[in-house]
Length: 114
Image 1: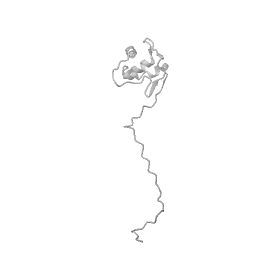
Image 2: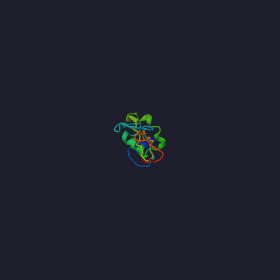
Image 3: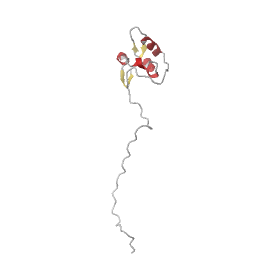
Image 4: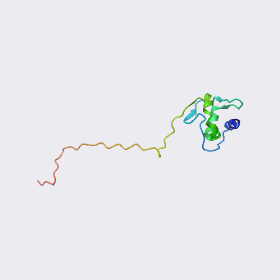
């Protein structure tokens, strides 16, 4: 089963839109040119393996056990995904500044005729 997985990972094929991270949730490969080797299996570049995971070429049930084995790929936390401005919560509107009234004129209840 692992042999099939490695062969598929050497050829980037889009199988479905639900991929996985070979490094684990929230992590990415920082050494894409490093070579991942597993005894009895063909070697593959970490970048190719990562792309295969992201595109769904690696079955999800096999992707979960990879993080402890891809140490040569130098996995690191990935940056936060960009925030979609349409679904992002809006910042609360700031209250308008309060301006104190000035005593420039005396107010009366009715007009005063001079």
